[in-house]
Length: 313
Image (cartoon, rainbow, N blue to C red; front, side, top):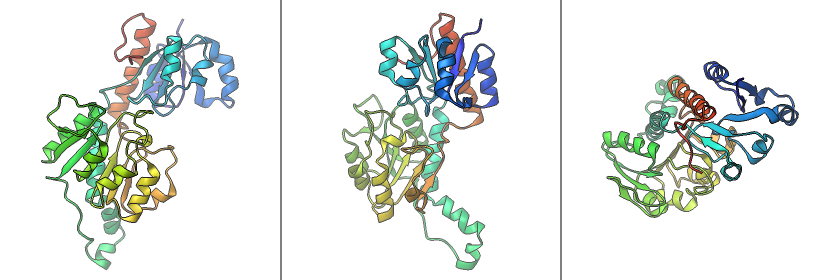
């Protein structure tokens, strides 16, 4: 008999089909009354397949008395109650590595778009304003500048490689220094003060919440550019909005937000911010690889084998 797995949110048809081959999938997002649905199917559920946004709360796991494994299609685990999982002996797996390059590409795209004002330039040409009003003001160079990376993990290192190819000098801040060719800063604000661009790739969760606060943003300064492809919780969204509006920060490129999918009107109305709806890993190739890894983690668990990408608890 196929193990019963709860899927929290819709995915691509191919990903759903891949999950349904080895498992009996229960679709939580289709339930008119989720609480009643969980009461009905909860006793049979042995696994959860979720994404980084939905995660797996203590409340959800608590409704599943036979739950053995949570497989997350993401790297970030801030929406998973790891303490609850550990206390109950529930295995957790995520999907590192397979999304690294696409998220790093997005970070570079946002940096270039913000520095070179790609979106306003597109509007200027598209609307006919170029012919009516002439050229737009000059923009900022990226090549040869200095960039700071907050969180030099897999994605941070991939971003750094791309920046090095553009002759950008790289430095970083982590909780502690690691073996790396880049200069280490013990304080995020000191790093921000010494660079032109600050790129956030830190893991989410309580340990990094509000790491990019008003002090860090003001240290980056009126010519600085902030890029966030990590989690919205890492950046003080109100402080960022104030700085962009008041000329204390030149521009920003944001793929993540504090209360997704809500993007504050104050941010949406600013001309010096490039916005993306959390699309860092959203390519056909990467989402297929993530879905495949979720299935492989679940299959390995129910076969009594080592998981490809377990999360240490």
